Length: 209
Image 1: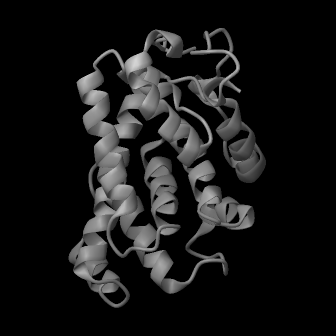
Image 2 (image 1 turned 60 degrees about the vertical axis):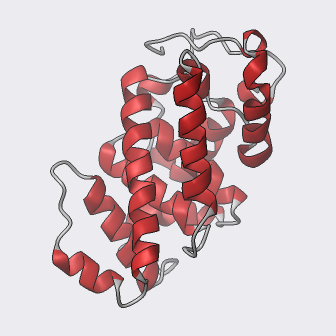
């Protein structure tokens, strides 16, 4: 059960535009937003940061949620691991490739450029940080410095999200729960993010379906 009850969507009409944006881009509204909405200024600034990191630059868009998954595996946040499976599918990553993310070092579904990016993300997300100059040497064989900045921005974004959702024990919504359970199989479980006993923000919306 979540450590903090999410606010109700119908009590936040001033944020309806933001919630609709998430419905359109992610297919549901994350429960974490209903918690963060207790400080709308923080929520607004955070949402703008997400938009900039996700939609600018030249790094392939499909790679960003895969970086998010690997970062969240390194940090241990199951909520974000599930969310980024949904984001990856919406960016046309095959479900089989999402499932193989746990073994990206050996899976033939990943090429060497993807492997060095995901290896960098994993090691940057660890505590203590395990990135070395050799990571950058390998990255620069495939990516330019601007793209490396984008990768690290995604890792940094999930540093925030992993801490937020693991600390709050944010209840996982049905859409990411179903996909993560199916794609990740016995490598993953919902853990503390089980929605049992927590009140949905608003019945009949994508955020609580």
